[in-house]
Image 1 (cartoon, rainbow, N blue to C red):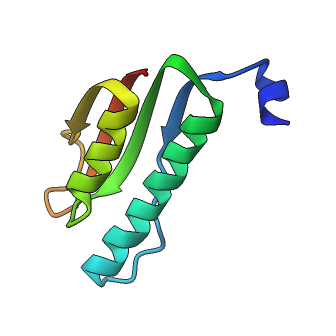
Image 2 (cartoon, one colour; image 1 turned 135 degrees about the vertical axis):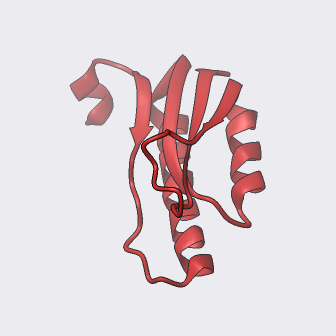
Image 3 (cartoon, rainbow, N blue to C red; image 1 turned 90 degrees about the vertical axis):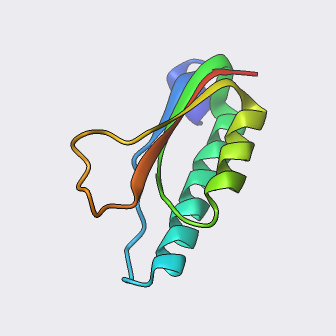
Amino acid sequence: ILKKAIGGKADVVLSDMAPNTTGIACVDVDRSTDLVMMALNTCDQFLKKGGNFVAKLFMGETFKSVQNEIQNRFNITRVIRPDSTRKQSREIFFVGKNKK
């Protein structure tokens, strides 16, 4: 239904999802990672070759594994922490450009 609604595959998948936080860092990071992985699965299904991806992640132990997953799917990857992000926040954004 989604492919039909957008007329084929998407140019961009953008995920600003964040879990309901518990205050327990490892739980919040794991939940955030699950959401990023769901967004990556959406890329696998709906993002066209050459498309781009942006997703928010809470920094933690899963950072490297998520980064590897994104690097496996995209030719260019970046990690961005916007200036507007609070200093105490663990929030970062992954950017994947040019889907393989």
